[in-house]
Structures are given as structure tokens and as C-alpha cells.
Amino acid sequence: MRKRVGFLFVAVLVTLCFLPLDSARAFHPSAFYAREAVGLARGPAFQVYDQSGNLVFTRFVLNPDFTTDLGLGRWERFDFKTFFFEDGILVCGRETAGLARGPAFQVWDSAGNLQVTRFVLNPDFTETNCLTADLDFDGSNEIIVWGRETLGLARGPAFQIFDLLGNLLLTRFVLNPDFTEVTVVTPLNIDFSGREILIGGRESAGLARGYAHQVWDRNGTFLFTRFILNGDFRGPLLIDRGF
Image: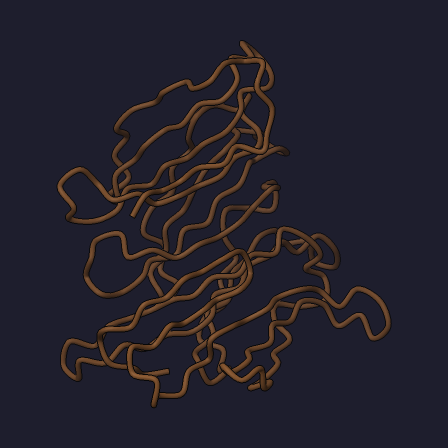
């Protein structure tokens, strides 16, 4: 969808809500994502609805072998020549049957056309998820995927950053292999020139020191680690990314 600058959006769980300043424009205000597991069992799909609750379209995504770690997001890209935004849907999941290739994401435009499919991390990762953020404030979102390498080398949590064309920008292993319950948010950096990557989790084995968070800049440079609360706390760990 193409829209002019000046629109606000709120993303809550799997619902994407667009709040137009110009009520005369039509938008796709909400999207829902789940997996058809019985009956025809066609696998993951998302639906987009307009502001009146009318179905705009349905798309089956990835393939029926994607059974877990489903994630939904919204991407946005600004065209500085036309002064319009383009936007669409990001979906992710983990292929656990069939070829069992592990986690992947797909980028769809606002008309329901598939733009990009990428398998990410590697098949030994579990507890994967994805989000979008404009890390460098250039008007185009990046895609962040993360999870825990629990098989094979079992190196623990890691994240990857991709552009909207599906090009891998960087990979970083974070925290240590004893961390579980990993989550990622993207707070503003200290000089408000972009966003950083904050990874939280719980060290549940080894020294078992409990919750910690680690901050990396958008170029993949490690900034700091802090243990928080104490080892007696249990999840889920909720993180407010700020603005």
C-alpha cells in the first residue's frame, strides 16, 4: 500500500492497526496470522481486514510443514522521490517437518503479493521469532530474526538482520548457551539517530544467574550486558522498548 507521510500505527501482538490522520483514505487496519492444523491442514495463513471489518484477502504462506514459532509483523519503506510510504506484511515460522529446513520469513506487499522468502539462522535453531524496525532511520525497515541454537553446535541465542530484499546484513551470537526465554526489542539509541538491538533472556543453566539483557548497536557492535532482578525470578520476561 502506498500512503503519504503522517500516519500513525500501533502493532499489538498479531493485530496491526493503522490510524490514518486523513479519514478519507482507505487502509488495511488489521492482520491476523495462524495455522490451519486440521481439516484441509494447509498450514499458516494470514488475513487482512479493512476498517469496517470486511475481509480484504487471505494468503496461505510458507508451507504446511511450518508448524511452530509463527511471527507476524508490518514492514514499511519510504520513497524519497515520491514522498509515499509502501508497506506490507512480514510472516515467519519454523519448518519442522518435510524438508525440516528450520526458520524462515516471507515479505508480502499490501496487495498480497509475495516479495521475498528467506531461510534464516540454521535448522538447529528453535524458539525463533521476527520483527521489523527502521534501525538507521533511513525510511526503510530492517528485519530482525532470532532464536536459540539448541542442536548441533548448540551455541545458544543469536540474531540476524536482513534488509527488505532479503539480503543478510549481519549475524551475532549473544549472551551465552545457557540462556533460554530469549526475546528481542529495538529501543532508540542514546543520540536518537537510530535503534539498537536489546536481547533479554534467562540464564537457566551453568551459573544460573537469572535474567539479563544485552545491547548491540545496529552495526552489530556489542555495547554492554546487565544482569537484572535476581536468579529467583521466572518468566515471561516483559521488556518495554521505550519510544
